[in-house]
Image 1 (cartoon, rainbow, N blue to C red):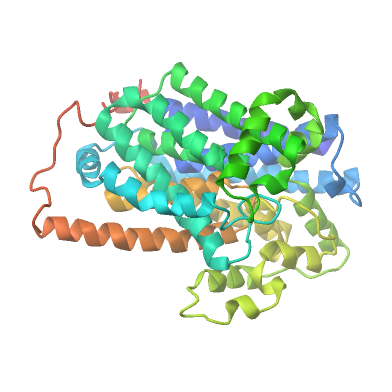
Image 2 (cartoon, rainbow, N blue to C red; image 1 turned 60 degrees about the vertical axis):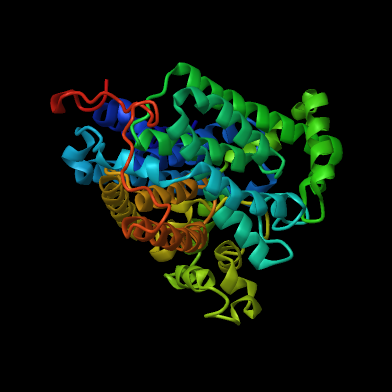
Length: 460
């Protein structure tokens, strides 16, 4: 281990200590806390496993000194983000959940109606639409299909699971989590299974649901099993089994092959897992290019991300532009001569290229302030805030991607928010069939966490 890496790990460890000391058992229900943990996973833990193990081909052309230079900036950035986040979160981090919106939100969503809405989208994607030729959830044959898969399906499935658990009781959580994960596994992306599980647990935690070791252990087991099955099936039958041209039968056979041959997961284990945590090579290439005289990216690519998220009806020519205008990752690779590889840009890694490494520290502080403001806003759950929160949780879990993840997800969330708000107004107007009263029966709503005193800094 080199000095810069050890310094970065020390700063990241300090960030974790500050986070746990302030939030205690409320860590699970804060999106900003989840962001910090994801950043440390990709930039801290990921760097350790890559230096101790076999580095991936994505690092070819990088020196240890160049990787260390990035560590000198990302470690302080994570700590600055944490300090700014906790400072703005302030007293809200020590107050109990505002429960008055939980009953309304629980009564508002109908899991049966949501299932009817989500089922056609799931069947559409399962039949081979919205994926890449090699498998996964990248842009495939149709931008519209890929948008359906990325923006609506996952959020719709999580909200459906949330509604079912919040109404049927916490005993339904584990069966629901298992079913949701099994359905997502057939779509062929490991991170999507992880994202769905985390989104569901955090959403329930935001509504006051308490978790025990069995819940956390089940989530870990689900994530591990999904990873083993998908990795083993990819080795056995290939990634194309989950690609854009693969139907339900092909995906099911691939999943079964992974279940029958779990030992295949040990083939190329370092490439499948260790290198997939490498969130540093992209940013290290970026800083190395700047030090060699290449200009910073500015906010041009962020503007392109926003333009790409505009519906085709309003921006009909967006897909005919250069790939450098449609992919922030491709624009960075071209600007800093990285070569096209399957690197992980990450949220902070992308921010570092906008105006250089020193402005990057300021941007990390501002981002911490934004996440704190959002978490304060999410303290009171409403149907609109729940949908927005679930979408943001998904973006954070997909931390490995660039900032286009936020703009495209935001488009889907806005559409869902419009639908939710319209339904909410219809219910409030007393349309026939709408509930006149909000049920607060304890057997309908998951029992919220018992609030402690303000001086206890959280839930017991």
